[in-house]
Image 1 (tube, rainbow, N blue to C red):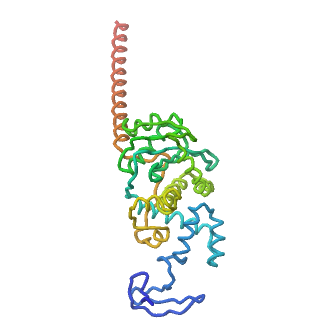
Image 2: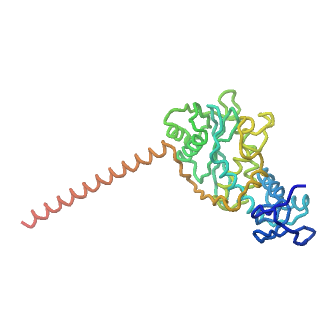
Image 3: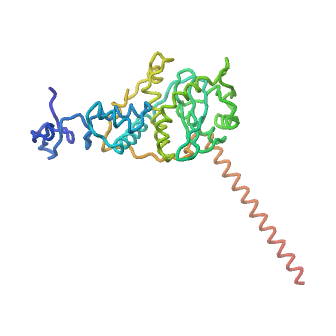
Length: 334
């Protein structure tokens, strides 16, 4: 049996401190706090395995009320729906923070597509782009519009994640991709507009992928605001790439199939590695993410320069009109 240490200061100078509901409590003489030897996180009462199970069920497509019933049947614990919701938000943010610097090894052909879902009574577009070789989901984007800028943001996010631009991007016939891809890649990538159910350059892969996305949309549709949907979309991206097995990849996740190592292999590792003192701060999501690629920065700067030039021309024109009015007025007075 392993030695019991304090959960707060890791001290072994502890004594038994009675029982409550058949659970043994301990007292730490060093930091003078009581705790149990149950496998729980600091300042939490629910075991790590139950939280991880809830996270896995949620990103597997179960709504929160179904997760609540499943935990009660499997573990015999009554957990409120708000508590489960807090787990989802907290540990999704932790996963995003841990995963943010990961660089995948992907191919040169990417496939992009979009689908629509109602959130809070309005249409919200889900944009996704995956690598056809590894089935790795490079980026997702949520928006209330379906414009060139949205397509550009999707491609830029994918380039930032992969660390390179693709040679080929396959999409459907949506006009927004034409200029969006050209601007995001500076014309480097070849753009092929295709259709599903064709033999070459088909979007069948991502059409099948959107069938898998029903798991994501089933849980997101219960939320009434797009900010939470952004958070869950990023969490689902991690679940899809790191934890979900794919038949096309010998029943391995895209990351595992690449042979890449991560500091976690499942939701339990995410939960168990959570540090209360260094908890990830809530991430502020907006409908238009703040991309940092050279293309977007360059175009923004050029827009500002053009705007300044236009304003300067307007000032000169106004000054000229004022001078002309002064001359006309002086002539009339004479």
